[in-house]
Image (tube, rainbow, N blue to C red):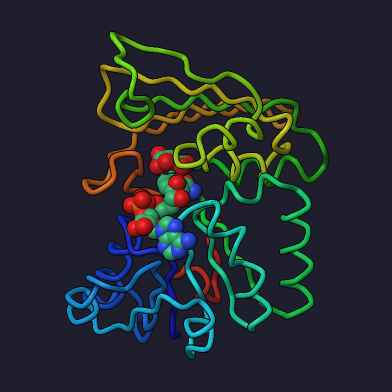
Length: 260
Ligand SMILES: NC(=O)C1=CN([C@@H]2O[C@H](COP(=O)(O)OP(=O)(O)OC[C@H]3O[C@@H](n4cnc5c(N)ncnc54)[C@H](O)[C@@H]3O)[C@@H](O)[C@H]2O)C=CC1
Ligand SMILES: O=C([O-])CC(=O)C(=O)O
């Protein structure tokens, strides 16, 4: 499979190394990378044997089957439609863009119309399988997420011990923290939606992990899940698991036997 990539930051470079150097998926590699300004990317282009583009239309013309977005919520809003219309599958990690239900519906309709898949990896959390299964019959009553990150990842203000920066719906959470709480949106999409999913964001001076605590209740019983993610060295806001979840989605897209 030929893959295109939008964004060459922390997750993007992890994917380049995993696919183009380590050979994570046999026969698949990133052949085209879209960045806003390709000056200065010569070394990476050489190291990963890949082409960099800073003109989106030219990037779209490249012969890739699937595009991975690893940039920003805004870039999904800007480019997702065109990618699908150009006959390419799309994997989105900045899933916060889909908090807008009309945009979500539009992408879903476009993907169906064009026969192209949209992959939304689980990112830096787990437990989505439980929510997906139980919400089918409408018997999921509540979902809450408490995210705790090192204070400096969330705020420039000095924090002595901990500070609750946000308490409200997932819809509002991603609007206020678009780089930090994409997890709340994948959780909402698997469960009871962006308005009913409650989110608390805590800046904690005493942690060095990105911690997500999920609680869900319904006719199935009760789920509690606490995940303490190691951050990635190049962007401590982002958990290592988020990057791994992209690889896992890619692998699943190739499998005939599905687990979970
Ligand atoms: N779903 C999830 O669980 C998670 C999602 N994320 C999201 O994944 C995305 C990538 O994360 P990182 O790699 O850690 O971020 P990063 O900030 O290290 O890299 C993003 C790169 O995208 C580039 N970029 C920004 N706008 C662009 C555009 N319009 N076109 C092309 N490139 C553009 C930036 O220059 C930067 O190099 C972020 O939106 C982040 O919030 C991160 C962690 C978990
Ligand atoms: O990586 C994480 O732990 C969560 C994150 O940044 C996000 O959901 O945007």
